[in-house]
Image 1 (cartoon, helix red, strand yellow):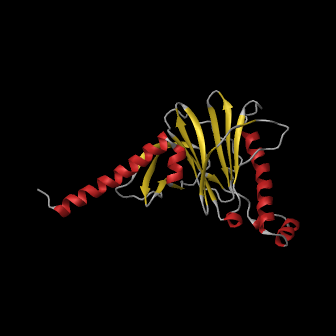
Image 2: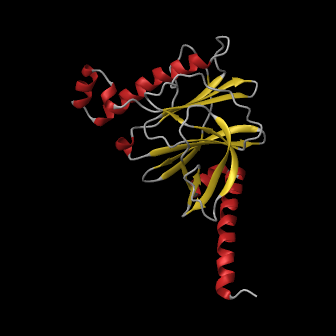
Image 3: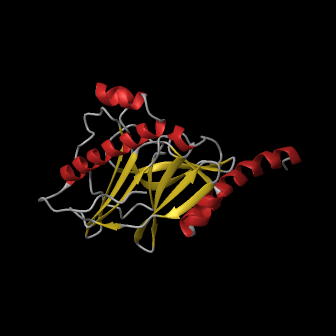
Length: 243
């Protein structure tokens, strides 16, 4: 028979994996409560298109880790998820049309942390969804006039400039993603602040519940807040509503 020390060494890995499985079940059953209890940490491989993948998942030190950065230890399990990487400000694929992936075999939809990025989620109707995550433009990408203005104003002006430029980029990406010129039915747009403004970051995750996708945003800063995101009907005439 194994001794006490050996039994403990066997029990701990089992408990670590059980903790991860319990966190996964909680996230699936009651996303809002789970996201209030656990901080999300999501990191994905570089890329530009959403794809279905077998993704590492781990509960570690009170954090839900999703992606290759999830600790590769006894707490690691795997989920089937749609993954949307960040498109860089200078990526050749920044405005490549978004895919409308088959979501049937996924339980979660994940993307990376936002600290100044803009995330657009589109519902084209008929169960077709798309997601795009755009990195903001860095300071040196602006023309000399804008750089001079930004240099002589509060940092909040730079953040506002970033969001304004990103809305133009979002529009260009949506236009590239239309099929037959048809607009999406509705959208969710999240524009996070440059992290230095409010010391916050945002994590967005989609959870399939009773056959439909619901999206939640966890904001981490001095406090943690969680909210379910609401779709906005598409309009070609009204400005974007953004979180």
